[in-house]
Length: 430
Image 1 (cartoon, one colour):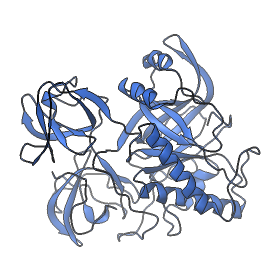
Image 2 (cartoon, rainbow, N blue to C red; image 1 turned 60 degrees about the vertical axis):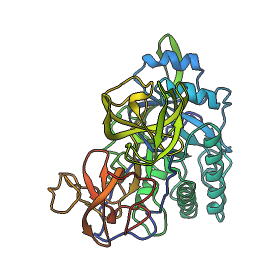
Image 3 (cartoon, rainbow, N blue to C red; image 1 turned 90 degrees about the vertical axis):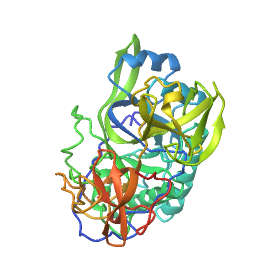
């Protein structure tokens, strides 16, 4: 990462496991709030030590980058953040930028950064819980919603030191579990030759919780999200990877020069609420259809805060429905979003990610085992990005099937949702 000025490298892997539900760890439960969504970003990103000004972010809209890593807190965060305020987050995300929240907490006891504040060899679990709670507080203060990913920045350490390696793994496991309890998605940034291979080695271990996403730094100029030398391609395979492929260099876009690291992502990032006004007096509903109960009446020209968009019955020229921050839905037809026939970036599609609990989980063309399977089943620990649920053929103890963001279906029995018998709130029904 740019703040330590070291060539970090980390990796991602997916492994094959048994065709039975996993233990409580490495897959740990996560519950989502009603008025939220997870946001998946695919594309180029950059990170800087200090968040740029709004003018600089405006100029850099001319760049190939569409997301920025921001250091939201941590005892080892070294750069001042005068720009990093709720109003900055609102303005930058309204421009279309995605945000990658980074927390620079306690470092390994054997960190190669000698000036870093370090975790205890024996109390790293408790310290990770404290750091996770602080990261969530910092994120919320900026308007970064639950269901967002927060990445713990674990800089390079001597992973030949067994006691140190154990402390780091316990810390990152506790970080993951605590973020899940706080209803956030857990990410880790790690060096290719320390945190990344250590997390890969523990991928299916029942002793450690598995992070939802892994972001590596390998400064080889290759932005590929596969082919990492210290992590198998089968770990963190479905919208769970980032790579920092070039470190600490200057780039100029829109006449503005910044010192950055360059990244590529296909991974969860921050979710925020976007403000729009309504064109006429409308109702909000408990689901994305007028068939659901009315929850409120919204006056003409009022501002609504939209977290994501989904599909529903057609109103006017569109089948798009907007999910509000209170968990209710309004038809997009009467909201002043740019598109009146389809989705309106930067609003994300509504989805909630959960880890899968078996290897080679079949993705089917409909909600049942009688439907044909698509190629490329999901490896164990990959994210099922669920858009909605409905009933289908029974598998194990449940008849619930999950529709994924790619349009395929998986049985809910092998996904780490809250129930193995019924639907999981706040996922909508298909």
